Image (cartoon, rainbow, N blue to C red):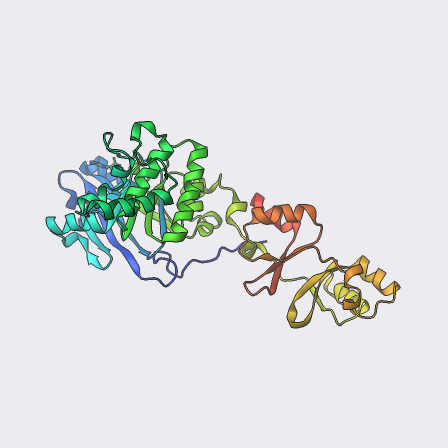
Length: 416
Ligand SMILES: Nc1ncnc2c1ncn2[C@@H]1O[C@H](COP(=O)(O)OP(=O)(O)OP(=O)(O)O)[C@@H](O)[C@H]1O
Ligand SMILES: [Mg+2]
C-alpha cells in the first residue's frame, strides 16, 4: 500500500495556508571570508561548500536560501551542526549581514535598514530566544522578563502588568522576585520565553531553545510552547537538531545541509517522502505513529448498507465486495455501527426484517468513528481492543473511510 503525504502547498517554499507572508527570504547567501562575493562569481557558482573552502578559503554559511513564512506559522529549521541554521536566523534580525539576497519582514526590506531603523526593528518587531538563556544574573525574574519593554521605554506599571501576564502564561507565577541562579534550566528558559513574548514581536526567533534541557523538561517545554502558540499565534522560526521536536512543533520544516535548504515541507511530507538520504537519515528514528493520521492510511469504507435494508441484502452486499463486515448507516448517512457476516446470518435466522429493528442485538455500536486527523497513536489502542475496521469521520461526522489493523501495522513499521 502506498501512503501519500498531504501536500502542504503546491510550492513547498511558500508557507501554509492563505495568511499573509511575514517573512520572505529570497536567494540569500552568507559567505564568510576575505572576499565573499567571489563565491557568487559565475565561474564559482557550481562549487560546493567543500570546494569553496579548499579552493578559495571561503566558508559558506548560506547558499541560495529561499522561503516564506506566513503569519502565525511555526517554521522549523533543522540540520546537522554547521549546516547554517544559526547563520540563517541571525540574518533575519541582521545580527549577521548577508552577502547577497533579499529579506522582507512584515513587508519591510530589512537589508536596507540603517542603524537607527535596525535598532527600532530589533526592539519592536523581533525577539530572540537562545539556547543559553541570556538572563541578567543581578536582575530578578520580573525585571529580566520585562527587559525588552524597559529598553522600549515603557513605564514601570504598564511594563510589569504586561510582563506578569507573560510570566503567568509560561507558568512562573510566584517566582517574580527570584534570581536566575535560584531557578532550574527549564525555568530560566521560561523567563527567556516570557521576555521574548512580552514585547509582542511580529516574529519570534528561537535558536535551539530547548537543547540544553533534560529530556523530560524538554518535552514539557515543547508542550508549553505548543499551548502558548495556540493562544498567541506568533510567527516563529524555531531551530533544532531534533526531528522529533521539529515534527511536534513545526507547521513546516526546512532541512538544511551545507548552507542549502534541501527540503521544505509539512512534517508528514518530510517523514513520508524524504527527498534524499540525508533527509531520510533524520527521519529514521521518528515515531511514525505520532505524525501519520487516519487521513494518510484509511481505505475507502468497506461495504455500506442503509439500516432500512434487511440482513439478507446486507449479506449479499458483503459477499459481492468480499468484505467480512459492513458499515450500517441510518438516515442522512449517519453511522450506526458495524455488521459482521456472522451476525447477519444470526439476524436472518432470527427473522429480523430490517437492520434497524435489530440494532441492539446484531449491530456492533460500541465503536465511534475517529476524526480523520487523529494521529495513529490514538487509533492503535482502539484497534487493539476491537477486531473490526475503525470508521473514520470528517469534520461533519460523515464516515469517509476505515482503518484496519493490518494497514495500521504496515504504516507504523514503514512496510508499505
Ligand atoms: N563568524 C564566522 N566566521 C566564519 N565562519 C563561520 C562564522 N559563523 C559561522 N561560520 C560557518 O558557517 C557555517 C554555518 O554555521 P552555523 O553556526 O550557522 O551552523 P549551525 O547549523 O547553527 O550549527 P550548530 O548546530 O552547531 O549550531 C559553519 O561552517 C561555520 O563554520
Ligand atoms: Mg547553531
